[in-house]
Length: 278
Image (cartoon, rainbow, N blue to C red; front, side):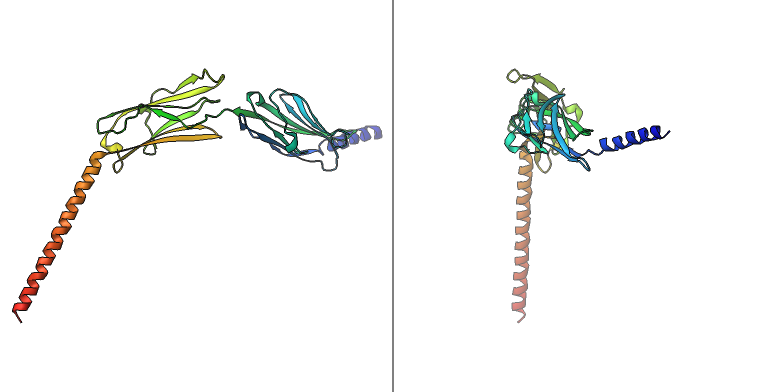
């Protein structure tokens, strides 16, 4: 009976030791930019244990190892798409440079305590490497000016990207109605493998209501959450609105002049009458 009790107590004690290593925070950006750099952070609490090793894996393959008590504490192993920046890397912070499409994958941090139990804690997160367009969306097909009854037929296109950009048209800051829009088109870029160009048409007839105080604003917005948000804006002016404004201003000026003349004449008559009565 005592032997069984001691055995159960030993198992319980060992389980407490295993759980003593605790990962407190895993800092891994889920979206990074191709050609750029990133930092992976692995924060942990050893509690009553001592750190034996910290290891990083990508898709199950070890590429970085830190053993503080070793003669050579740091070791870096080749894994395609992973380039460790040794100058910027510390025990809990790992810097990666020259990110590429091959850098995408599942990254895992493992923290091991010392023997005899070698307790372990880990955390993992998937990293996406996005290729962003070099510029904002490009609009073609617009005229220099529009009048009532004119047809707007424009196309908005993004540069090559991965994943594809989401396009949206706005008229005076409000999302264009669905019946104004054509089908959203994806075109594979011949110059950049595994990338896409997004295209979206805008077609509608211009009415007076489209001009707000004589101004019509068209905007194409391209987004690749959460890293890319660009927009291109074109502004058009209603010439008739300007002419009406000028005409109203001239009428107001004439009215004001007439009032001034009338007031001056009235004052003159009062002055004459006053002089005659003296």
